[in-house]
Structures are given as structure tokens and as C-alpha cells.
Image (tube, rainbow, N blue to C red; front, side, top):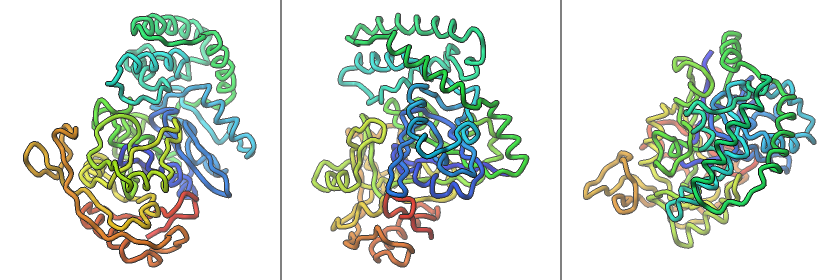
Length: 423
């Protein structure tokens, strides 16, 4: 059996959590494969809004097993808070939630290092969420990290102490004013670790192989977005993991030839949180309207998202590097009422017109070319079928499919799980 993937195709915040929740009924296992609590996957149903940071978005379906894979980095403190928020819903996390022993832990000093590093950059800061993600992945690749499986070993606290001491020396090196009380942070951390140890740890690559062999249907859930990939994103304004399809193989221990459908999610427009180039960004009342109507605020940080028109150059690039087989368009309802809608179809790059995503998309080298469409005024939030859409929205979808050459299978018309139109 194949493993299907669900990925964001922009700079994150595309609505992956909602769609995982919508399609989980088709799957036996939902597996997160990279990132950490810098993710904010929002699910809304029965009048309640849920935000998950580390736990897979299938957790509210009792028939589904949810796996936090080896490619994920886990902050026990944030994880404990997620568990506390799930408690009223009587979810059996001890049987429905598994954690890979090879997943790395975010220590309190990782978060402090993140803050010190970002502060030292001044105006050149990258817009980190300050969750300790980058420093944790640095320790992982530097072969210094502490993994979930270490918590089962007698000497794990000695390993912790040695690494935390090293981190404090590094914090002093940055020579910035970071105020903290490590003893208080450690007390909260160690208490949260004890809660984490009550859950089920697994050798996740073996779990995945056995599940596939027994015919289980598996969905790998990505975090962030393809344009934040550490290799293929807008470096250095990226996250610290591989957010693209290749990351599912290394983040879960599955072979490339086991990958089935690659489901790509994109908004009907584009947003970005934090620093970094954004060719189609809007600085006018239209951009402000999109942000307000779309409630574009980071689910993890609360920061307002920068808003702009859909960028087909970046979208085609993400589709290509992920091998996307089907698409889902989110937040089409947000564009309702805008008189003219634009789509970037090419770039003016160093004096020539290009349609591929170049090495740099900084504003001094890239200017977007737009195609303009007539907007739609109808409220589409109650639409149940594609035929309920106004002709202008259908023309927008048809144009995108014709240019992208990948089918758009679902269109979201609101935040609730029921506000999803299948084509």
C-alpha cells in the first residue's frame, strides 16, 4: 500500500489542518513527518476552533492512529498543553497517539538560543517563531541532540545537563540581553517530560512498514509550506526542515517508491508570515481587506500575515518539486466582493521575462506580471456543489487548472469542516 502525502505549496498557513481533518475518514493512520510547534494547524467543527501544533490533525477521529514521526522536533511543554486542551474531548491518546523514539526534543535552552540568535541579527532577522526549532535541528545535524528514545535511558538527564550547559555558553557568546530563569524553565520542562513518558513510544519506521504491509491507509501530514523548505525555499527566510515531499521519506522512514497521491494545498491568494521576499504582496486596501476577511493571523504566533495575489510562478515550482498529483484551493470565499482579482503568471527578472522560480525573488531583481480577472460578489460560504459557484469563480478555477495542469479536486469556502466543495 502507498503512503499519500498532504503538503502546503506556499509559505505555510494554507489550511492543511482543516483538510487533514476532512479526509481523515479515508485513512487509518495520520503521520506528521517534519517541523515542530512552529506549526499551527487549525480545525473548526461543531462551533469549536482547535489549534494543533505537534499532534497530527486526525486526532479527533477515533478510528485513526496518529503518529508523530522521527522528523518532527517536540517541545514537551507545548505538547503537554496540547494534551490538556484535548482532555475535555475524552480522546484516548495512549492508544491513538504514538511518538517516534527517533524524534528530537526541544530543550528550554533551545528556545533561549533561538531568541538570542534572532536578537543578534537586528534588522536582518529572519522572523523566527522563537520556538527553538532551528537550534534543535542544528543539534540534530551536529549529532548533539536528545531524542525521545533517550528518555527511556538511565543517563538521559546527564546528557541533558551537558547539552544545556553548552547552550548557555553559546547564549553568552551572542552578547544580547536575554532575561531568563533557567531553573523555572527546567522545572516546567521536566514535569512535561514525565507526562510525555506516559504516552506510547514506537520505532516508527518499523511501525510504518508493518502498517503498509498489513494494508493500512496512511496519510503523511506536512507542516509549514514548500517555499519554506530549507533547501528549496526562499533561503535564509525559511524553516529548518524539509517541508517538501522528500521530507516525508526521511521524516517517516518510508521509501520513495511507496509514495502514492501527493495532495498540494494552496490559498486562492498568497500570504507570508515574518520576513522574506514576497513578489505579489499588496500594500493597499485590497491587501488589508484580504487580511481582515481571511482572519490572517498566525495560529502559532498571532502575528498578522502579509497578503498578496496568487503567484503561479511559485505555485508551479512547488508542484514540480513535490510531484503533486492533485490540488486543493483554500479560502476562495475570502476573495468574494473584490472587483478585480489578479494572478501573477510570470516574472520580470534581470531584464527578461521568466516563468520559472529563480534563485532570488528579492524586489530589486523580480517584478510580477499579472493577469486580471473579474471578481465575484456572491457569498459562497454556503455552497455545497461546484455548480453553486458564480461563473467568475469557475472561470478563475478553470484558468488555474489550464495553466497548472494538475486537477483541483477540492475548494474550501469557509473554515468549518463542512464548508468544503468536492469536484
